[in-house]
Image (tube, rainbow, N blue to C red; front, side, top):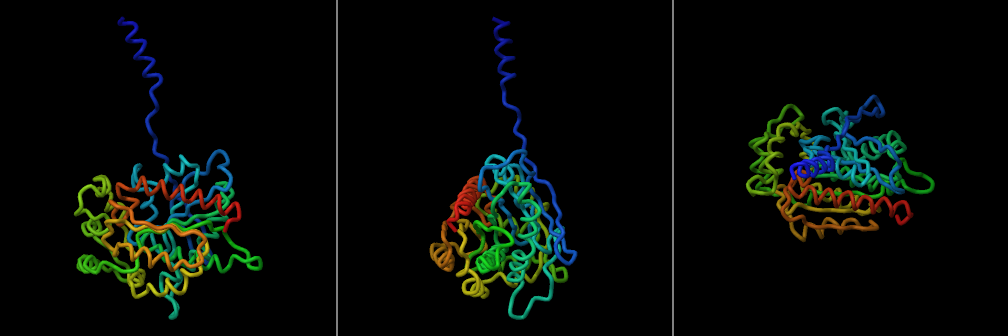
Length: 341
């Protein structure tokens, strides 16, 4: 009996699954025009070709974060879903953040900082990423994932791409869809008033202290929205950002996106708001007003995610959100490959 017990135990140990290893994202740096640089994180190229019409997801973070927002912890990262679904994932440091060169200045009088950032994203960033990595990844299109203050630049790029995507003009990169969250039509003014005393301007840059970020970005006042390990990462994930983008992120500029860019976007759009977002007004009217502006998009889906804070990728809902992001991106890639849009 003792021998049998040892035999069964040894077999159990031999058949036990190996410990889970979190897929890592590696740093990258790419040269842009005029000696500018684009930096960020990306998953490794696969050892074998991915399924046909697989897209590359290009993620862009919001204000006061960096590319590491999308790889915060093993439980709050796009890398695991990238590996499982064999969909390459790349997150950039937005222009002016960390290792990425800022958008050229000054901003034209008839434009704004976020509009110029969107143009830069379209003309410089996305073509460079496509030329550098599309063959290695074996992908056929790009799907952009944008959060918070990066939403306008994704919209601008998608509108410009639709305008440039003609038989005579061609295209510098194939865009299959945009996924947007954390940006609405009306700010929560109570939250903005609470934030202002904590702002620490440093020239034309701004630092937001950790204590107010936990309140605003993660809605710490509501227990259970965010795992405790994320609060321990607040300082590490925090970074300064430009005053210009904060000035450009209010409802007064909503008309610029609504009339100048959103009606011309043709690719599919997925738009979600976090149910417990502390920065924006969250209701059915906001959803309706926002998605109604995408008049020419071939597919628009929207919704409110209950139990999610402003930073959904850092919330406990992140697993569900990432699963939807990657699944939806796959659908867009296949549809684009079939010529549906």
